[in-house]
Length: 325
Image 1 (cartoon, rainbow, N blue to C red):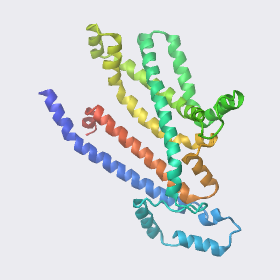
Image 2 (image 1 turned 120 degrees about the vertical axis):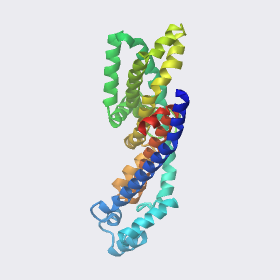
Image 3 (image 1 turned 120 degrees about the horizontal axis):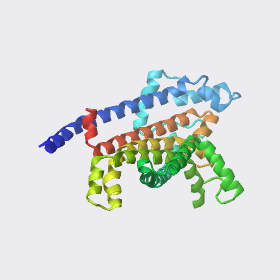
Image 4 (image 1 turned 90 degrees about the horizontal axis):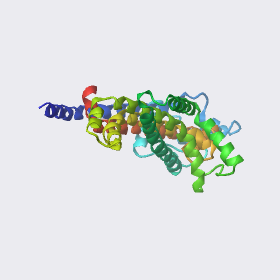
């Protein structure tokens, strides 16, 4: 009866849970879109004059402003911007004169591929390392190994991606000449950017996996599984690890969002043809519509990752929807 009642309660909370998540996503997306729109208008100076240069003729500046609709009242521009987003229109680049959506479409795949590969590297490396360290240090054993693991993971997590990328280039690309310095043409050119993005998050995730697994290993159901003389691999992989996945998945979603944001600096170190290098170049060229569109894509990607993680957590642990309600 208790199990049936809990299932019924879990089922009854799914609709409110989905409604809350959908409303939160829509409101957050609206705030993001509004902030991206206001970005151009809050920046001091004239973005058209900045992009064309101080020596540009006044009539050219005026015609460009009229073509972009920047002379219209702010509510009219905002409505046109919103309706354009529904059509996939992110505006026109001030420097290239091409649609921002086309520019993003050309550069987005390289950024997504880099972030996804780095995330896969984080998961494949961090989860086994965290599990092994939890097993070998449980019960206060191997204090030296625990201290070395904790210290090294803290140090690696504290190094900024940009500084780590510069160090990797200096040692592996310049000194040892093992990998290309820039670009993404050869398979070896993916190694250093992925490592620069993934080393810090992998260290953080490995620590979380170890802490969560140590907590689970002290529960009664794990001791019961051991009392049944089950093989150690079944105890750890079938009984302990799935119960430690909730916090790991939550942090994993946050790490994926941070990896997407971290591509901005790493791409500039390795001259990676993605959105990160494009947004820095657009800022230098005062191409604010392009910056606006890329910021919107980055923000929407982070919101979407958070939404997927929330749904995945609810599927893995339906009790979380009941606790939230």
